[in-house]
Image (cartoon, rainbow, N blue to C red; front, side, top):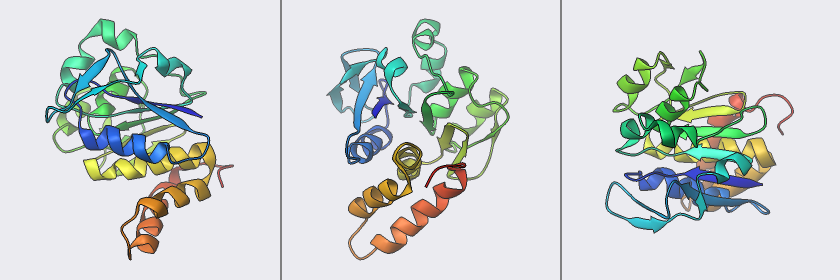
Amino acid sequence: MRAAIVTFDGFNELDSFVALALLNRVPGWRAALCGPGGTVTSMNGVRVETQQGIEFIEQADAVLIGSGVRTRDIVWDTKLMARIRLDPARQIIGAQCSGALVLAKLGLLGDAPVCTDLTSKPWVMETGARVVDAPFHASGNVATAGGCMAAHYLAAWTIARGAGVEAARAVIDYVAPVSEKAETVARVIGVVTPFLGDGVE
């Protein structure tokens, strides 16, 4: 299973790094930071090398789009947006916070409920998307999460869709705080389970 964590300049570290860390804990999976250039700099000045170019998106089995302080600029960059080719028929696709704006501009949200952060909410609503007050929602192969700390919901859903609920449970259990593992796993799995669809166990 190959996963692309789409990361642009101005990215939110929590969105990209939490997804990267959790997905790479699944045996046989390989998640990689993916961006339009060789390096990206976070909203707090952390500069990292991307592991894959943006064209890797087309090859990936799962694609998660993180948020950042430059998302509104990104969606108006027609050349860059043309390089983001997603196929919900065969890919697991998710967006964190302002990443929902990218999916909206690509026409991938339809009329399904959309989750995003409070700052991004008016921008996402301007696209005609129906934003709801919830941390996570998925419809078919497309999911959105709202709030930085909802990153583990998006990652857990992605793992459950691609490797099963027990794989997601195992990853969340591993990273959960000591003495809070059972309740953390129950909460996370409880949030994503209603959105897994038929055939996911």
